[in-house]
Amino acid sequence: MAELLQEGGVWLYVFIFVGKILEVSVSTVRLVLINRGERVRGAAIAFVEILLWLAVTGTVLAGFQSDWIRVLVFAAAFAIGNYVGSWVEDRLAFGLCSIQVIVPDCVESLDIATRLRENKFAVTVLQGQGKDGPRELMLLHIKRKRIPQAVQIIRSELDTAVITVNDSKILHGGFIGK
Image 1: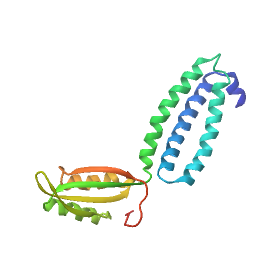
Image 2 (image 1 turned 180 degrees about the vertical axis):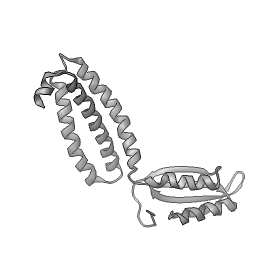
Image 3 (image 1 turned 90 degrees about the vertical axis):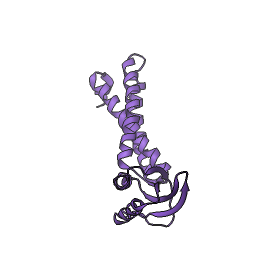
Image 4 (image 1 turned 120 degrees about the vertical axis):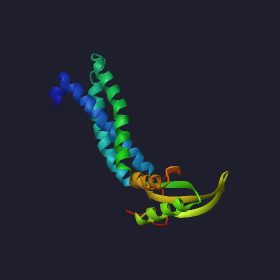
């Protein structure tokens, strides 16, 4: 392996490209985990990340002065790795979020709360007043993986509902359905 990377050739560029994409993707996931309070998982991933970084960056630095293609491949892979990492993190959907739903005070709003509860979502309903009359504000705290399901239920009952989603770092108490 070391000889293959020292000699150059197409495999050197493939190693740099794939390795850097993997390293940056892992880095993105690590940062998200740490920001969401998952310090132990983040630290474990950091170990893998730094091993990848040393291998890939060392390969680029070992010969970049005579081979500028290494630098271009490294830079392109870095950019692609950011995209891939954010895509992977979105699919893994670590953590929690808060959803706020604003709907007119009507039969459909009762149906939304009922259907959400039937699907193991905890919903708190507050009464409010908007510029066009009475409103209900529904509050949900859920796992990020369940956002599409909750939004689909809300939109199927009342497609004019105003829905906002915010990340939540820590939640104490309450009910989080599976």
